[in-house]
Image (cartoon, rainbow, N blue to C red; front, top):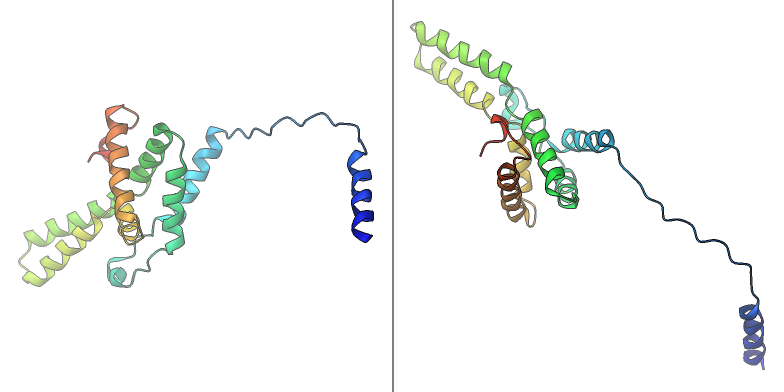
Length: 177
């Protein structure tokens, strides 16, 4: 009897008609260019490891795996080639080689070559110059390659960069392959 009574009660509630509300319009979130650029910059600052001084180069902490995975996830979620090209351009331009450091190290090497010194001093100065010539984004790519599917992602990223160059979406010496 209880089962019968509960089904009758349910029927009464189901037949009760409420006035209909007008349907809500879908929420459309338009991101401004500044918001997208700000989000890209924030992502890159989190994901790209800072360049350590030459003396601490062996003790550089790897970025958290989650930060690299965030970069992969966000890049994969970008809707079109123009957005991907914008992110790659920002990565290359903002996280490349520190030209001031390169100039300083190369001046040091030139100065040491002109003075008679031990070979070890010159070799160390050359090593410092080589270290200064490594772009910051290389650390990000190195850590992405260790993720599951990371190498496949990097190959796709390179293909996207080549496509962006062919479509003239990104140009300049900082994005040459």
